[in-house]
Length: 421
Image (cartoon, rainbow, N blue to C red):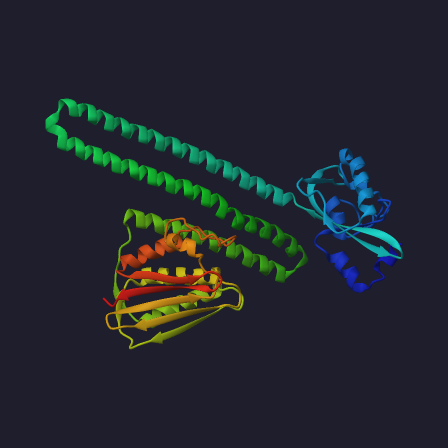
């Protein structure tokens, strides 16, 4: 029977032999007919050693009886499905060691006999990564609780100071002016503490969520690269290297947003204007953005009016443009266009960036520039909700204005307006 399994051609044989995941062919009696090399290696068996053995030999003893019952149920109504949805599955190697697996089932009829196809993946590394992420989240929660305790202690101390000042006011009428000044300072300090507490709490929440996906991508890709390296599969190795680079770039963007916000909050942004050629500055920002565009996305640039020299901070302007271009790409599908317009007017110039993306729901538009705000239709698109808040504050630092028009499902246009000097 084993030889007939490959009667469908050499292609099936090559796929079966070279597959990175384990593949088992089992008859209706639960006897293994074929196991590919990946399965034999995964379970620690020699070539051909698994053929003829009961499938239950690959399960820990405590699960075997229940599995026989489940197998009989599957034979009565065979259909492709995943095993163990909602719970962890364990397998056992020849040496008796247990490890977690993910199993998908299918079936095929050969010579009027039903064969069950089981696809098995060793998810040990994934489980380790999930455990590492879980521990990191616990550490973040501990840090948040400690931070909240310290803020509460400071708040209590400030409240006590206010109370003491109020009592002293009954006996020291001549210090009324000084007391009021102290109360105002205490109120501002308390408000600042509450604002910082809110900012840090939101940072912990966003970081634990936004860091998880790229970190999981890095871990899974690194594991797969090790497997593909043994097979010399350079194309797949390159693919996962690109995934790692993309995940790292995303993490870098998140950290840059928080660093920029911190500098703006503390007033540590110095504006250094110089005379620049606006069309050249915009083209450079577009060139920097092109490698990060989605598949088949294109950017187009057009200038209108009589070009005039303008004075601006190149570094800040580049950050503004790159942020808006990045959003235009991120919230648009592959193949969509991004149009950039530069218009010269008598006393000012305008830069417009138009996309064909998901647009902004009308109810969300009034909150668009608020810190940590994300539109209700952003779904699983990655982001911190800080980008547009930072852009608006950068624009105001340069003495400009930012406006937008948007229609949900049709796209968005952001327009920047600046004086020449």
